[in-house]
Image (cartoon, rainbow, N blue to C red; front, side, top):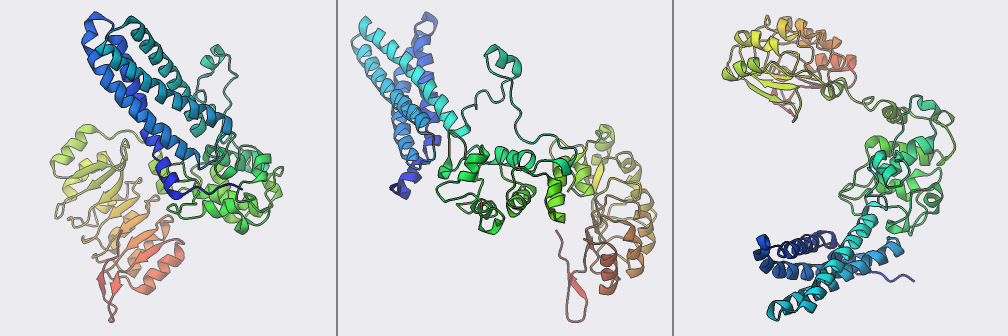
Length: 478
């Protein structure tokens, strides 16, 4: 019967990956300093080699102890773990003995001791390389060094061509094999780094269908046809802060679409040889499947727009606008899409010529509390890449809304504190992708808001918080 490992052992063992980088740096530096000191130009650096070597030997011993504690958690390939463990111990012993020889030689110079010292340094570097390689293999898989090696180098090294991992191009989702084309790539890119032939956390391996079916120490990974009773599905839906959540913190997480597809596969009986067309597919699953053909399939028009490329705006125009106090920033680092904020009480009409020149790049525009008339909205209505538009506390009326009906990418519109009414906002029924609409302290009634929401599924009209008289008193904005 397997002995339970105490929490303190596992807690201390988790420091092994942090500490092990210290001896690597110290010992490599000690080796370089010692070799360099053999040349007359750098002979003075030899005095530092001993101290650096001492630090390396001490940290190597600590790393070896912590590594032993970490290994008690299990889940590693025993043969590979043994090589890593003993080579790590070898590094600690070799570096410690090398330091003692260095100390002895500095006090009583001897050619024999010096040769023994250099020999131990060489052995130390060799065992350090072995320990590092097998440690990396335990953590990242046995092919972690060669996984991304170009085929040209692989041919020189006598290795077979690189095997492409992950999702293959799917052009016809109905003809896709559920396991080999969908499920296995998800497991391969998100799960097998911890559940493979060299590292099997929880004694579970997922890199082949046979081992996946075998399960781990907690039993079967899944129950065919019953996602609710399947351990694998339970864990992927746990909160990310939960200790049992999979993948664990620090690993590449599953997307919502991945979770949906894995749950669907198990609920469908976990078929290994069926195509999508042979299994019942819900609307939610179909949406997730569509992302495998087109990663942007489940994106809103605004998200697709921001994910696309746009030419940079005219730099001189941006400089001129900023000199007039306009705040202009990219919506994201490295993006050419712009968010523009016009200062309070500033006349928008006087800025319109400059804004028109960069209208292609403007996607977030905040004109709140500015001086703007319905006439200026004629130009704003041609800013077709707008996804967010703020017009709160301006002179905009129902008449001006007529000019905004062509903003097909608009998802957020803020009109609170304006003179718009139920009649005016009904013109916005053409904005099929509008999702958030703020109209508190306006002439819009709950009935008018409801009518617009009924016409635009997914729209949320925000009328603010109302007191017992029905008067809006505060805004709930984002």
